[in-house]
Every structure is written in structure tokens, then in C-alpha cells.
Image 1 (spheres, helix red, strand yellow):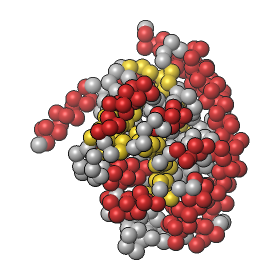
Image 2: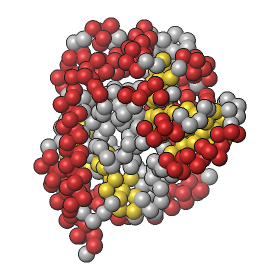
Image 3: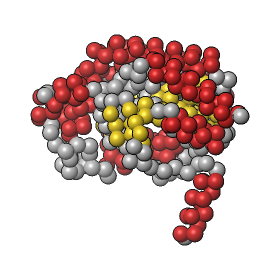
Image 4: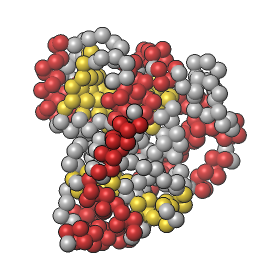
Length: 391
């Protein structure tokens, strides 16, 4: 068995696809690797709340912190771990989104739990965007054999064709997509999805707003907030712009009760520490006050994309603060990553299976506090690296 594993790892290494871990230190916008401080372009702390010492100090001085300073729930929620703060936070989310809320330990837990529970239902079909997050796929493959199709990324004609072919054959169809896609960095076509849904009586929309909650939309409440009545399942995560940990599924009451009884990732996991739930609650309370940060994030994202497009002869993906430079080849992406580190930038190469074959890229995850002159310097460095690679 050891030889088999070594062979697999060697194959990954030879294809420039071997993943490794390294110890990290963090300081404001920087990350330390091999003793060198680099500008961190891989963080999901989009509003820089997680590194905002004033924001953290305000939380530590709050009633939410003082009353919920427990570093372990010591049990699952279905046993003795359902602290009052869980119910209070869920009630607050329900008041914002007008849907029942159910907390999970992470976005991965939420998708695994909700989708594996839904997959137990009879005569249903899941149709997923081809670029959907791995947690959705894992949820569908967890415990039951499911009817599952995929449509071309953000291709509404392909989706419509699949719906027309299958609508009469299933009791229910669940369309799975993301609000802001984690790799392509583009937005789901919400209005088109809703229009398609309305053409069929048995279609449900399941949308994951992991990368848009907090950093996008009215009061930071995401892409779907203006059309919540049309969204059947909304997943929000708190470990990115919300500077905390955990996630929730927003849905109808009957589905919430169903998930409590059949979502294994909820039933069989020790609940998050109450202090994390309190921090998520605290962050949501402050979202309306962060409009300047969201505006700056939008502006630097647009300006940086234009800068890249004007200076580099590569495909640039992304419509907001997740931008990708498509280099296609694994070795080329690794070369660019290492050369950028020499110049003071940390932007890990993204390779299969996270993305399709021959689509390896550098992914730039922007946060609102990054000075634009550093992004200009990054663009200059990319031009130099490209010239060096070609020569």
C-alpha cells in the first residue's frame, strides 16, 4: 500500500500538481512564508474585518462576547450543545432574510448536510452548474445514489434544455449554483435562473453565497437579497467577509425541520463554540456600517481587472474581487507563483481538480484595504515574469 501511495504522490509531483502545507504567520495584509513577508492575495477576508484590531476590540468589549465566552460547545446541538446564542442568531437571520435559518459548522458542512439530506428524497433530480463548489458534489455523492446532471457554466440555454428534458420525469428538480463563483469570480445569472424556475412548477433554486455575503449587495446581504422570495435555499458562510466561522442554510420551515432530522453533518458534529456564533452575530449587526469598505472593494477590483487586461495578453476571469489570470499549464502557473514570491506577492497557483484540466491559473483574492499602488506593482511583476518565462 505504501508503494501505491508513493507512486500516486510522485505522479502528482511530476505533473506539478502536488499540494503541500507550510507554517504561516499573518500580519495585517501580509503572510510570512519561509521567513519572508508577502502581500497576501489568497485571503477571503474581503472587508479586512478579521485583521481589524479595533473591530476585534469592540467585540471583546461587547455583551455578546461576555455572555458567550465558551471555547467549546462540548456536544452536538441535538444533545446539550444548543446554547441560547444559536437560537438568538438564527432568529436574527430570519428577521433579515424572512426565511428559517439553520446553523452549520462551515459552508462545507452546510452543503454536505443539506444536499445529502435532500438526496434521500425519492424521484428528484439535481442540476448543478459545472463550476459548482466541491462541497455540493460531495454532498450529492455522500450516501445515496442520486439523479444528477450538470449544465455548462452560467449557460442558461444549456440549463433550459436540461429542464425541458427532465421536468416531467421528476417530482422535484433542484438547481445548484453559487452567487459569486469561487474560482471563475463571476456572478450567477440570478434573474435568468428565476425566470427559468417560473416556467416549471417543480423547480427549486439552491444558491451558495459564500463569497458574496458581507462584501456585496444592499447592506452586504448578498446577490440574492432583492429576490429572496424566489430563492428556496440560500447558503451563507461566515469564515470569509464575516470574519468568523460557520455557515447557515436559509429555507422554509419544513425543510429546516427535515435537515435537523437528516443532515448528518449537523447531527453528528460537535457544535461550534458559542464564542464563534457570537462573533458571526456581531459581524452581521455591523454590516450596514461597512458600505465604504464594500465600495472600495468594488472600485479596486474593477480598476485592477482593467489594469491586467491592458497589460497582459492572457484571459482574465472575474467580475468582482476574485480575479484569475489563466495560464493553462500547471508548470507555468507554479513558475509564476514562485517568481511572484521572490518579488513579495503570495498568489498560489490553482490547479486541477479544483479547476478543469488545462485551466491552471493564478487567483487574486482582493481585500478592500490593499493599496492600489501595490496592485500596480503586482501587474508590473507579472509582465516581467511573463517576459522571463517566454525567453
